[in-house]
Structure formats: C-alpha cells, structure tokens
Image 1 (cartoon, rainbow, N blue to C red):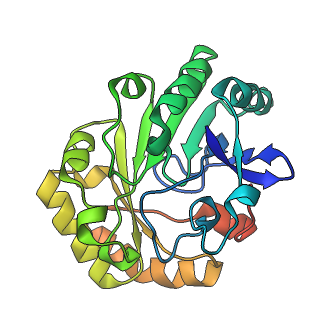
Image 2: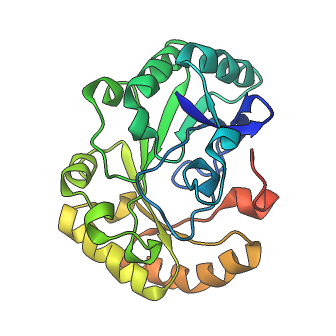
Length: 237
C-alpha cells in the first residue's frame, strides 16, 4: 500500500487525538495513505497527491499491510484503541486497506475510515469498518461537480448509521449547498457536521462564529479542527 512518508524511511503512522468530526478528541493512531482522486484548492495534505508541487518519490513509501500493522499495534499498546485510516483518499487502495483493517480489528482495535464519498466501499471493507467519516466536497473546493458528487457513493453512505458526514465550509453559501445535498440524499441533520476551513486558529475562530448561528438554525453539528488549534499545520499530529 502507498503511504505518505513522514520522515526518512518512516511512513506517516502516528498517535494523536482525532481532530475532526464526531469523534473529535478521541485518542487515536493515524495511518495516512497517499493518492487522491480529487484536488481540493484548500487541501492541507497536498503532499499526498499533488505531484506538481511535491516529489512523489520523496513523499511516498510502499509497505505491505503486514508491515504497517505492527507499527499501528506498537502505538496502540501505549493507550489509543481507535485507528483512523486517512489520506489522500483511502478507498483508492481498498484491497490493501481491507487487509490492514482486518488484522487490526482482530487485535481489538476500532476502525475509522475517512473518505470523500466518491467511491463505493467493497463488501469486504464495509464489514470491518466501525465508522465512516464521510467528507463530500463542495463547489468551493475547486473540483468539478461531476467529480465531487457521485450519486451512487453518496446513496450508499447516506442511510448508514455508522456514516457521519463532515463538510468543510469557507463561506455562508457553502452552508446552503450542504443543506441542499443533505436533503437530496436524505442525510439526517444529526449526522452532519459543519467544520470551518482554515489552518490557523484565528481563521477557524472567525468562521466558527457565524457558522455556529447557521448550525443552530439547521440542526447541524458545529465542528472544529482540534489538531490545528493545538499544533498548527505540523505534520504527524
């Protein structure tokens, strides 16, 4: 499987706290995979996919799931029992992801997978994952509508009680787009989190103030980026 390289010959596998979504604050071990099928203008992990700005050979590392699992288990032995498989877009590597998730579940770990909701998960992977962190992209991401909204994938995630939706919001118009998408696919408001876009605390605070009012009106959850508030844009946090 192709992973992000954190330093030297080490993959980006690290222990921290979940910074976003419904499990924000939960101690977790993160595994960051490379490659993505979308190209968000504001993406803060472009080093996983933007080979015009980053060198692929320098930024990636290929390891078998059997080589990744011991690294995760060593970090989990220190306390975190939750694993977040993130990216990039993890579902581009479903077979390898299923093998890794299956081994970690066998060791009693809880599995979260983060996805942009453009790919339908395989049955094998769906049977292992405890929680889907689904983050469909909006027009403000810079992706074309046909690329960012895949009805078959959204229709798969929408009715699942283990799928929680997180939308990155830059401007008030984004909230209207979220409300329309949630209505279109029948996504309950209680499973929707609106998270301000930003990589510095001041930007998050400013956007959160007006976003809080919209959440109160629409019944959506207000999220944040806890890792940014704690460590800024530092990698491996």
